[in-house]
Image (cartoon, rainbow over all chains, first blue to last red; front, side, top):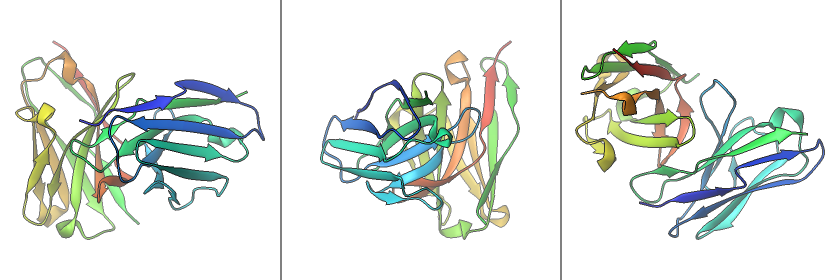
Length: 106
Length: 117
């Protein structure tokens, strides 16, 4: 099973600040997918196949990476971006998720 | 548009079984893969398995074999998950999701399962 380790676990950012969330895989994967989840709601697909933004996702978000190291970047933090972000790999069964990064607004 | 509407919260006794449903619309269900996922606060999200609605073929996470059984009803575009021999470890929110080549484009709203006597 591929274990995904996200860092940091929790962070706070000020409006306008650049934010980078990291996801490391225990083995190489072809792509990484990211989800945003707000409290009490279901996860939403945010970035798929490493760098493709899901429908409706603002272009201040971007994704990058390869092999075992991937990241999600917010170019300029906004209040609405406060949420938990999960990475997920679909390259190997069982499909697995990271434990999430909780992003808060300062 | 795509909708996945899950059944309501369940309170079940230890040792009992429960069947969750996920009624879909807005896409071609009969050629879709539907996954089920489990979320417990802290430990994150676990993938339980998928079912191909076309022929009922399944692929389970080894961890959930014997615990979860996935089925579909093509006539009503509904996916189901049976959970058996429930314990406190099965208490969680369960989601259905449309599986798109290993990622999940659309999710249901989730069903809370509470296990208590």
